[in-house]
Length: 165
Picture 1: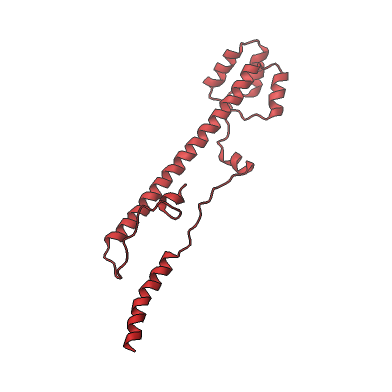
Picture 2: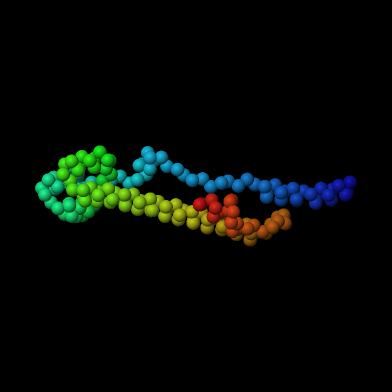
């Protein structure tokens, strides 16, 4: 009977450690956005200089560089559809102005996306710092049951660094 208990006491910690080591690892998820969700996240364009005034300036014969300068100085933003671009071209707006309108909005969209990525990256760094701090706090606390020291810097799936990627 005593022998069975000693074997049981020897096997029990091994079973507990095996159960802890076999935890499932969650794979990272990538958030995919649909067109409607992307449109909702993008900042809405503000046109201090309405398109009608751009057409009027073009009909007055102002050079494209002057029209572009006025659009830039007014900080106007436009998100034009293909049909709107064709209508503006038919109304006499120079192609250089149309190119500027499209490229400026594209540049702003890229800048907005870069800002969002910076915010996500900062949140990820903060999360990593919290998780590593919690891991280090566990390794400093005296263990109730002898166990190996936690590895605060694992490199594979399940590590703090992996979850933010």
